[in-house]
Length: 75
Image 1 (cartoon, rainbow, N blue to C red):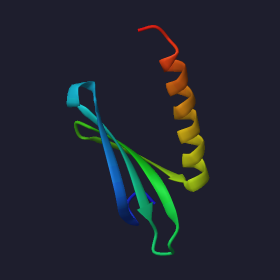
Image 2: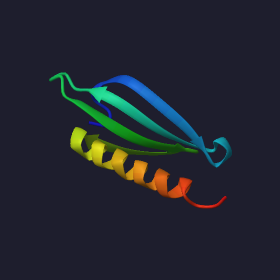
Image 3: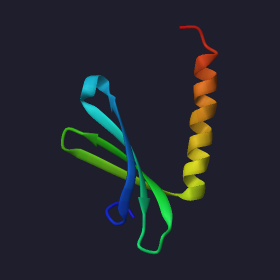
Image 4: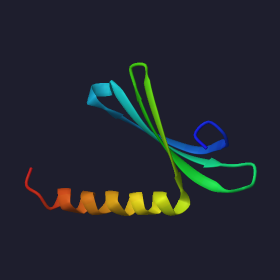
């Protein structure tokens, strides 16, 4: 899943002063099935985490919860 499929959309976010990139990639298999790959890219190190639709939805909900908690904390 990580290397197969066609990338339909990609969102990259730089971390650690640009030394690392976290990439979310919406992909589609030849069968038409959609899924998301989370990629962590840093100096010669590539980590890929494919997620089926329901797994990504759970991940996204957890990110939204963390965002809400972070917004409620003092700077």
